[in-house]
Structure formats: structure tokens, C-alpha cells
Amino acid sequence: MIRYLKKYRLFFILAPLFMLGEVSMDLMQPKLMGIIVDEGVLGLSNGGTGDLSLVISVGVKMIALVLFGCFCGIMSGVFANLCSQNYGNDIRKDAFRKVMSLSFEQTDHFSTGSLITRVTNDITQVQNLVMQCIRGFVRTFLLFAGGILCMLTLDLSFGAVLVCALPLIVICVIFFIGKANPKFVILQDKLDKLNDVMQENVSGIRVVKAYVKEDYEKGRFGEANDELVGTQLDVLLLFSYMTPIMNIILNFSIAAVIKIGAIQVGNGSVTPGDVMAAITYISQILNAVMRMTMIFQTVSRGVASGKRIKEILDCEPSIADGDFAGECAVKGKVEFRNVSFAYPDMKNEKVIRDFSLTIMPGETVGILGATGCGKSTLVNLIPRFYDVTEGEVLVDDVDVRSYKLGELRKKVAIALQKSEIFSTSIRENIAWGDPDADDEQIRRAAAVAQALEFIDQKAEGLDTQVTQGGHSLSGGQKQRVAISRAVLKNAEILIFDDTTSALDLKTEAKLYEALKKEYAGMTKIIIAQRVASVKDADRIVVIENGKMAACGSHDDLMESSNIYRDIYDSQLKR
Image (cartoon, rainbow, N blue to C red):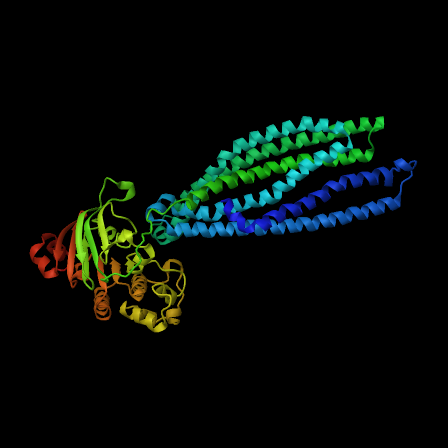
């Protein structure tokens, strides 16, 4: 993931350079303060007479250095933020692109909540890691190393305090960071779980309320939240133990410097100003080490999050592009050749078994069968939402696995039973089928889908805003908007996956009549539970347990298929 920093290497270099300027100013202050104390106040080289002009001149110099250090600190922060935020922005976009390219199998593997966490919280943690590396880490390291050098220039005996204090600090840091590191991965997993519960409840709020399950879901959310908070508390408690221990070591070190300084002042080998400077330096050194522990915490969490993001970025889509993007001699032909299919997590349970069918261009084919017999699975193989386990699916006499995915899916328009409606205007929802369509084309598609009758009744017509998930529309209205979108695409192959289930029979009949009239050359595949939905199709395919049980026109099946006749009798015979 370091490659994402290459674009911002200038910011990556400038931020530490300006931080070097800020830290240098900080390290100069104690020595200047020592001069003020020794010469300006105590007048050690002037017979004990202080020098006010020296205090003023050195004080002005200190203020000037502080202002310059402040400028350097601001610029370091600006460049560090430009680097980290742009870095995170690029990763987030690439991660989202990768999520969009994953197959259904892969998105199911990660879960929606986990993907949301990775693209949001995990990338934020990595941004913080970059920020700390080019700003926080540089500052603490320079203060640590620079402070040691400056303190040793005062008197080597002060180094004895560091020799005693640093091993204790290092042991403390290693112990607590080692304990905390494994918990950061657990923390992100708990956040995944919380987001999963939240996403399920927001999208399914109507079901929750209808079944009066608010208290149950509150409990489920509370349990997930308690687990998250519990893990966070474990980490925070570890660091809460560490802070006072580090403070004790710091205070003992300062006391030791004062004691050694007092002895050295008595011997005349150091001055009181040197002792004051040494106290400041050792405070800077040990505070730098303490800040380093907090940086290690950020780094540990960032590394854990980085691994989770890398899992997405390195994940190759299981549905890979083919090479074919050429013109076909036929348009709208679909063929299943000895197709068998099993879902990846249930490879021993075939949903489709040895299925063969050829659908000619412009033909209307209805697919009928009991719930769970494999109807939807079958049509999902056409746009390659999944790949066949055995056999071939061909579109226009070309195996779908040979197509570039974009080219294949341009040939197919699909409308699902659960209509995905976006929180924008009705016009934009329909225009998903063809972003370049004008109002006349959008209204024509809506008219075919029998959607104009309710759209024109709304005050803002096509510009009516739809709430999230399409909750401001009825089930039938959502389905008609989704059908309008599919019709507007004007693809070679139109698939209705039980898309008219919420429509009354009269509206459904008008829809199919309009489709037959306006889009006669389009191949239509209609999955339905109702015989009335497919009764007028050119052919009707009856599926039972993943196999073709019968195929023919309505009249043919009424004579030859007991299964079809039973379905017809149960629904339409009076």
C-alpha cells in the first residue's frame, strides 16, 4: 500500500523537514533559558550582578525562535494532512472500486458490515498511521535523539540518569504494546459485527416494527456494542496502567537530575542554568518516549486495519473478464448447454442439473416452478452473476465466459422482484437504464411499464424525490420504476425475475401487451409464480428440482404436463 504515497512524496518529504525545524527550535530553548538564569539573573561571569539587557535580548531571540518553530509546526501539519488525507482518499476509492468488481460470492464472504468498516473506519486508521509516521514519529524521535545529545553536552554525568531510566521505559513499552496489539484485530472484528446489526436493522426496519421486535433488536445491538466497548476498554485499561508507571519513572528521573545537579553545582562543574536545562531535556526525552507509546498504539491499529484493507485490494474477482467484445451475427439468442450449477459454499448440492434450452432472438419465454427450484439461479447465469459449475451458457452463440463483462451486461436488462430504488428522483432512478436518455424516452419507458399513471399524479412528476430504499413508493410502484429502468436500457435480452409479483393482473396484462407492441424484437425471459404472468409466452419452461420438467406453449403444456396442469388448476380453475 506504500505505492499510494508515491503521488504525494513531496508532501511526505516536506512534512518531516518542517518538523525538523520545529523540534530544533524546541531543543534550543532550554540552553537559552540556562543563559538567562546563569548570566542574566545570577550573573555568574559578572561577579553576581545580573544583566537585564541580556535577559531582554535572549528573551527576544527565544520568542523569535518560538514563532519560527510555530510556523514550521503549522507547515508540517498542513503537509502531513495533505499527504495522509489524499492517501486515504485514493485507497478508499480503489477499495470501493474493488468492492464493486467482486462477485456475489465474494461480497457474501466479507459481509456488508465488514466491507463498510473496511472502507470507512479501517482506512481512517491507516490515514492516522501515515500522519503519525511523518509527523508524530518524526517529532518524538528527533526530540528523543536531540534531547540526549543536548543533555550530554551539558555534563556527561546526566547521562547516567538516562542509562537507568531508558531500559525501564523500553521494558514497559514492549510489555504493554505486546499485550494490546492482538486486541486491535479483535476490535475491528467487533466493529464489523456492530455494523452488520446496524445495517440489517436500518434496511429491515419495517419488518422489525411489524413483528414488534424493537426490544429484541435493541438487545442484539446492545450485545454487539457491549462486546465492542469491552474490547476497547481492555485496550484503554492497559494503557491506563502504563501512563502512571511512565510518569513515576519520569519523576524519579527528574529528581535524580536535580540531585546530581545539586552535587555538581556544589563542585562548581555545572551551573544552575545547566541543571534547569538538563531537567527540561530529560522531560523532553522521556515525554517523547511516552508519546512514542501512543504512536505505537496508532501504528499497531493502523497495521491491523491495513491488513484488512489489503485483503480487499488483493482480492481478485472470481468472475473474471473475458476477451470478446466484438459484434455477433445474431442478437438476443440465449442457449443453455447441459448446465449444472452449485453455489460455492454448497458444492455438493446442485441447484441446476443438466439443463439445456435454446431461446431464439425476439422470443418470449416464461419460466415457472415452485419456490427454490432454481428459476432465479438459472437467469443469474446469463449476465454472469455466477459461473456455471458444468456446461455452458451462450449469448448470441458466444460463451458468456468469453465476453468482457461490460459488453455482456450491456446485452442484458434485468428487473428483480425486490426492486432496488435509490434515494434520488424517479427520473434519475429510471435513467439508470440509459443516462443519455431524454424526457421523451424516459416517459415512453415509464408508459410501457405502466408507471406514468402514478408518476403523473404526483405534484413533481418525474422529479419526485424517493426516500432511501424507495420507502415512499408502494411495492407495485417500485416494481414499475424498476421495469421502466430495464425497458429504457433497450437491451437485446430483457429478464423479469418475478418482477410483476406486486402488480394486479390487469396492470400486468397491459405491461406485457405494451412490451409485445413496442419491443417485439427483444428477447424476453419472464420468471413468475403465477401462470397468468407467462400464459401468453411463446414457450413456457417448467422447472422442478433444478431440471426441466416440461417445455412448450400454454396449450401444449395443458395437454402434456401434469405439473403445469396442477399449477394452472390451483391458481386459475374455479
